[in-house]
Length: 102
Image (cartoon, rainbow, N blue to C red; front, side, top):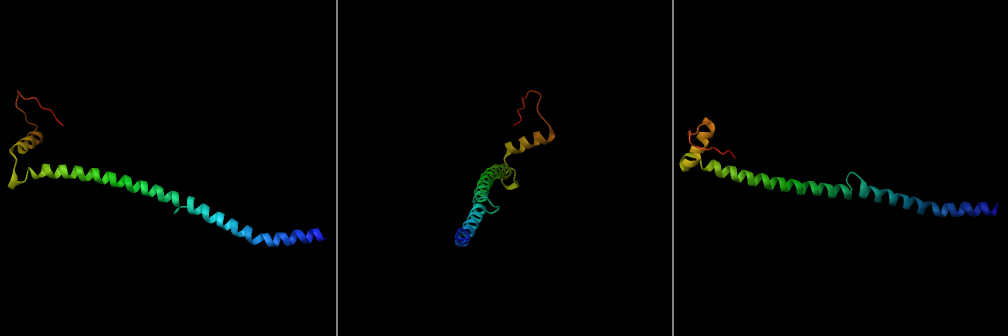
């Protein structure tokens, strides 16, 4: 009986540290692996960086298109750009010209 009582006493004294260790392990796991954990944060930061890269590329493309559009404005009309657009839109070329489309 004394052995059984000793086991019960030690089990009761070890119960709370075991519960706290399990709770700590549970929350630590979900802090790293959970939906809002550290790994998700790293993936989200990578997606944000990728979005910034795409945004920069689109801004560059937009700046190029704005420059081409500015050449066709009535107050600043570029004759070469007007001729290029007219040839493309009307599908027109002189018989002795070689057309290279970009």
